[in-house]
Image (cartoon, rainbow, N blue to C red; front, side, top):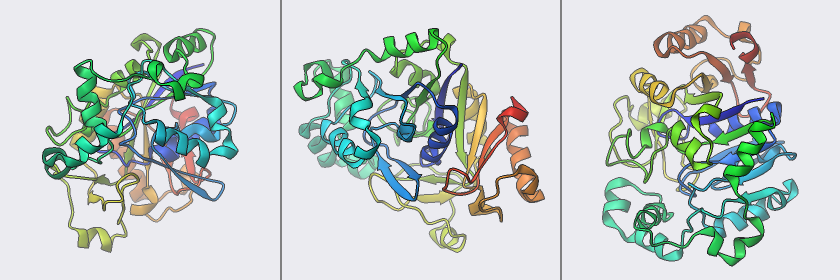
Length: 339
């Protein structure tokens, strides 16, 4: 069995939720662990005709036999978590959720500081969820953590120990990273970035898994690029052009309209290099090419295949998952052929 990490390849919004849901439904891992910043990142999941917007719960929740875990590196807002327990009641998320006792807690003060900071809210384009101020307080060692939060007591689990024991026992562990590589505090378009690193190595650290135990790093790219908030965007197109191509989108957390751009090959190469990608999942291919709901690679057009071949040639990483629609079955899975 394997330990896999899924990473957003650009500025987030790459369709990670769909990919995670598909992979977890098919590979059936024993543990699905959430890594990343915290509830400032939203994942959209469509399953059985219903759509869910998640901020803390792992997107693989639809695989109901898996334990769901939130790693120590993730900021937790208990109000957000408990709301998702209620929204996902029929999937028994509450009964399966584990929170590492070392997680730091977002408070109302963090949210207020985030929203009232002109630098964060106006210049940087923060989501206002309190993550930046909370991570600042964590660095200063002046923040409440989960083990000191009574309402989280029944969910506390040493996530690192659980994940490592599962790997050592030959079980499947899937680590979900949030946001995207280009929002990394270190490698992103500083200062228009999030409040911590968002690469695969940090996601492994978030859940307490060492690098030698990671088998696969799946980098997710959308067939075009989108970004919420301020900051440089080399391949950005006009809103008029985005509308003409039917690429209008809105953020899961903020509801803000996303900026849209053409696929950025230079960014893709850097993202694959720094993340150590072993696979690429390519989403929204149907938005650019006439291939909606295609489930067989041979049925893709020559133009679509050339686009995929170019990505593989430039990055040196195989495109193993191709998403041609929002439904789980609208997926071409080439892992058996390519790995």
